[in-house]
Amino acid sequence: VCSSDLASVLLQPEAERMVEELRLMKLEDVGAPAWTKQHQALEKLNMQAQISVMNQGDEFVVEALIDHEKIQLLIQDLLITEAWKEKVLPLVQAELAGAHYVKLYLIMYHEAIVLGLLEKAFFTSTAVAAGGDMLVELADYCYRRTVYLNNVDPNQVEPEVSRDSLKEDIMSQTDVDRIVEQKIKIDFGAGIAALTLLAFWRTMPRACPFRC
Image: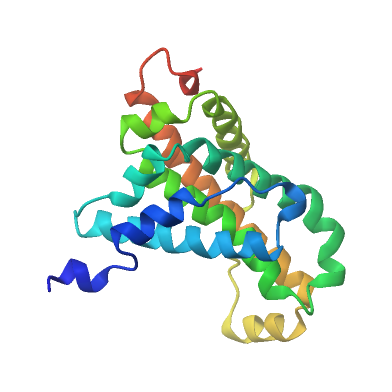
């Protein structure tokens, strides 16, 4: 058995089935059991796609996303997650941060997983073309994320503190503080991923709406 087989998270038939079963979730579905199951599937698909890139192997996850026409779905999923983070999270974090910290974190981190899949997929022009009209929405998303990067205080992302002060900060943190801190880090990572997606701008045809 080769090393790439040992490193695999999914076999091609499993990945194919997972991709085929992906469904668009609505804003009100976020955090529900069906959403959580799909989140876990996307996480495995993202891990396998990363392994394929590292091993320079068959990128069957990306191929499945293209063949089953799921690129637009990923972009829509990304936008729904962004909307949930910006509109819903501030309303529920005080109530849910204590008992449901892990769930809130997973929902925020979902954005990073979807971005990871899009980054790997967009190495191929076929995947970019499969984005269709949703590429305009993705361009707007990337713009919002780059504006955030331009305005964020680096000390918010990685504060410069001594070991003693770090210990005190951790001890004094509330559950809401931890959620806010994680959101800042995830938003920063999303901004970096958006820059990567924008790098594909130069390789796209002039007719592609993502260039506009």
